[in-house]
Length: 187
Image (tube, rainbow, N blue to C red; front, top):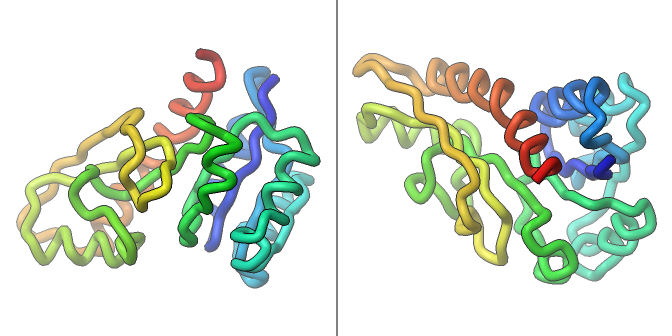
């Protein structure tokens, strides 16, 4: 059974979905949730499932303390589920092709620093895109530039709002993210 740690900065709906999914699977288990936000909703969601959380600072992340904690719990995979900080090179090097992120757009479009959540959805609506979707990718040292593992598109209507787009993306994330993680754990 593969050991997973999840990183999240916000409400934690994707993290909760992953935790819940793997409570019923033998391929993996979520050992801990790491967050850089002491007020993140993900903390309560993890607690509901008995998954310990670790709150850390940007300095802890960049100076090696977080890597020490990940190693001390014996993690095999790292999943970024709404984690907003740039992932440091020391962790990327320690877990090559074992760090996965989900992005709420079809990369390479709408990627990079500052492109997350509603920022992306508003840009997609403003640019009158005919489709958007999700991208699940490996993490490298650049924002949203790691090798793409999986993409799923959804059609958009001309009268979409950013809020409607967010709902469509959330549905894709909830359906596909845990399944793609499981397929990687089993490969």
